[in-house]
Length: 398
Image 1 (tube, rainbow, N blue to C red):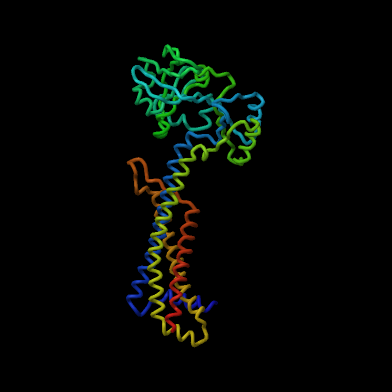
Image 2 (image 1 turned 180 degrees about the horizontal axis):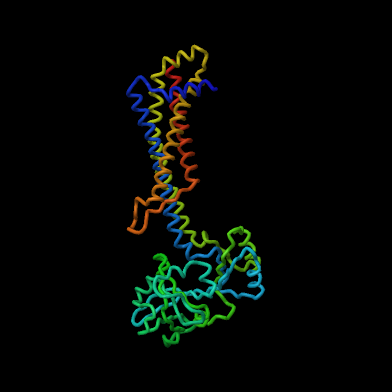
């Protein structure tokens, strides 16, 4: 056994004759434990919040979405649809027509987006489960499902037959408009349902049947603004994206769920990094106690160190004694802190001690990657602190 590690282990497990040094050592150990515990709990809480935030977009966004590279719409050939249907990695696809419109009900108006969907759409995502009032649209019907915020702005309820919801879309063309009525195409529909996903989506979309949207926008039967695809769980996302591009001769853009919410993912990752750096700084401050504890141990064991030097140990081997002692303190504190933190996270998952609302527990998520991040952070910073403090051995031996 390495003699330096053996002596360091004896120093680590034995009490000092000086009470002050024992107190400093305990404070340093508690600081490392608390730092590891706090960092892991915060990272787990943020992972839970991230999962909770993305659950709303995951409910609405498909695995892949196909857009036109040029213009708002593109044409679908029967051969392309057949290739999509025969691809084993593509479970199903849905044709979508989306356009900005003006919604009007009685005397109230608000802008929004019409989203015409086919019968497959509700099987690709969980939008149907987000309807808290009424029901989903029927096929080939003049019906609409509104977001909760849109329904409140328009003061429209489900199957309100006192008036129909009107859609206004500008007519394409050039020249001066002499009659406002001639500048817009209009269509009427009955509100059959109201959904709620999140604030952004609730004030944006009005879902209708795709044929209703085609008629309003005067599009061709095989003309769409996008395709939404559900991919098999075992499929490789990158290869499927390439296959879809090849089907459309690279005339389309194919985006996955992360790319569709690029700004949201960047914001969450930036916040996660900021939280990690802030609590890493807390751990660095706590490790100053470790440095102080090892320096005090070096001073206390000065005579022992000189004896070991006379017995044949080199200065480097004596430095390693205190380096190993500080490393053991940091690693042991990190392991204990992680163990306690895992218990805290599991207890929140099991018993839901902290609640955001009476029915919603504070979201946390236990991830193995966070365990490695915390352990690596504690270990690397602890080794650095131990190395710095062990350098005082040279001066103590003079």
